[in-house]
Image (cartoon, rainbow over all chains, first blue to last red; front, top):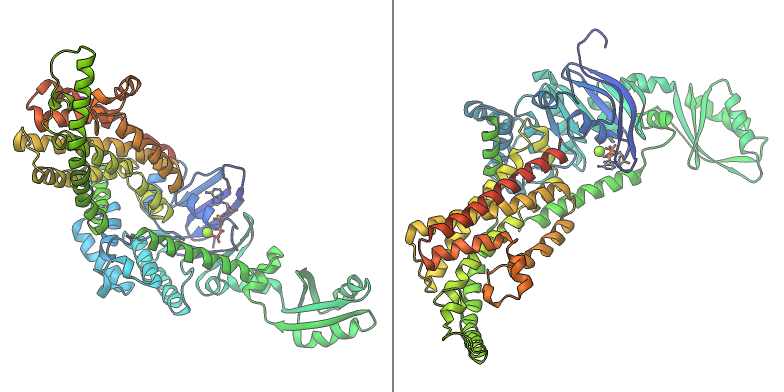
Amino acid sequence: MPQKTLTIEVKGLTKIYPGGIRAVNGVDFAVAEGEIFGMLGPNGAGKSSIITMLTTLSSITGGTALVAGEDVAAHPYRVRRAIGYVSQDLAVDDNLTGWENLFLQAKFYGLTNEQVKQRLNEVLTMVNLKDRAHDLAETYSGGMRKRLDIAEGLIHRPRILFLDEPTLGLDIQTRQEIWKYILFLRKEAGMTIFLTTHYMEEADRLCDRIAIIDRGVIKAIDTPDRLKAEIGGDVITMTLNDSGRGITRAVELIKGLPEVRQVKSHAEEYIVIVENGELTVPKIFEVIRDTDTKITKITVKRPALDDVYLHFTGRGLRDEIEGSKEEGFRQRMVMRRARRR
Amino acid sequence: MKLGSDIYYVFWREMKRFWLQKTRVAMTIFQPLIWFALMGSTMNNLTQGMAAGSLMKRMMDGGTGPLLIKNFLDGAPDYMTYVAGGIIAMTALSGGIFGGTTVVWDRRLGFLNKMLAAPINRASIPLGKMLAIAVQNTIQVAVIVIIAMIFGVNFRTGLTGILLILFIAALFSMGMSGISLALGARLKSIEALFAIINMLFMPLIFSSPAMFPASAMPGWLLAFSHWNPVTYVVMPLRVLIYKGWLWKDILFGASVIVGFVLLTGALAVLQFRQSFS
Ligand SMILES: Nc1ncnc2c1ncn2[C@@H]1O[C@H](COP(=O)(O)OP(=O)(O)OP(=O)(O)O)[C@@H](O)[C@H]1O
Ligand SMILES: [Mg+2]
């Protein structure tokens, strides 16, 4: 989107933590005004590290970042005034009511009492918390807390809203509700939204463009549709079984088929990208018939972002990853409870 | 003016939380009650014995004249009156020294980052928290004063003196919280912070005349007590409680504490600036 004004411009951004962990390794990207830009990647990919640098919360080791037209390193205060930040941590204060949480945030952004009254009303309605506004946040469910947290990020009408994993640990209904708000915000307020996620569906549904990030490096940036098109066809996943040393040859033979674009191995499986899945499967069986190799399992499907992810990183977003994330989320909730007395 | 408003709202949050922590508010009343009820009455008897013992020793050493309990307890008529100032100082110390834990919790729960992402002055976070600790301490000490009165302690300088006692104790808790907040900003784990607090708390109490008179301290401890800020809180508090308006002593102690607060406040602000640039 070169004709639009850019509101985030990042060049060679690098983060090395004390101890030498290179969490972000020279990334470049730009986000246009009014765009919903997503960053998709697994645990430890560097998503939060990028967000904390762009929101002035951690120092930039290398490269430059402009946010809302301001250099983040040179003018952090100006950047802070232009942005809203909703962290991955569900950072509402349990000892305050929803209303007080919002009030505090509004005052930190220097809103007048009149503005406070009007905006609080507005955002509470929007996130559907009006009737619970005067209850302590510790009595809220996870979804309500997240909505409150997002509302806090909006109270001062930022030009750019940073959402770090906005639906982590939420059930599907709440997740969909939050997606609705995010789309609403862009439509009604023209807000630019930068979000990170490790949910494929979320990236697909919300984002105008997605950056796929893995181990601190951006592997691809494009619209979800174009990313899927880049794969170029259907995805066949199969497991091979071999008594001798024939697998390499079998793979060579499969690669030789005119319909086959690409063959990759991932864990125990082979991923074959083909033009027409249903027609190619019999041909695959045909071509390896004379080798010692047997196909023990095979599936065909249209490409999803998962496949895009695998295509660009050579790795899958596996279940264990998701499991550990939700575990982390639960631990945070336990910690909160432990804190209350 | 943004700094003033930022400090106020950080303070506002801490106060809201304070009233909610029912256990904490209850402990405010309960703890001094226990001190007076148990320590006070036991020590009343014990100190009489100790005074008698030390009187005997002096007589055998061929010391000068009779020694009264009064002299042994730095001029206090009884241990209860003597220890009231110590309990107030100890309450201020513990209220202040635990102040840094809120930073560690805020960091853990992500609330600190929320504040840091907002356009607020970095200094407002420690300063607002220090202010809240001072006010919370004032409330606690007011409760202690009332309990002390119930236990028969006679505050010689009246209401003005009591207000001054509240003020000095509040300043001290604020000063201690400055150290604790600086530590909290630097250390990332609550365990490490607690370890340091525990390491500091007891020595600070027992190397000061808070609980036991300086006359009972061995020489090396007495020397150390001159470097202990608690000594300089206890001294003016005792003067106000049972000695009367000895302005020189009051002003001396108070100015040491004011200097202490300025120093630790600056320390906390600098540490926050450094930790969260
Ligand atoms: N404060 C820190 N100190 C040292 N290393 C860190 C710190 N924060 C993150 N890292 C490391 O940097 C890498 C990237 O972490 P980051 O939190 O940015 O990933 P992420 O993509 O947000 O992951 P997640 O999906 O788990 O939130 C990881 O290897 C992590 O261990
Ligand atoms: Mg993250």
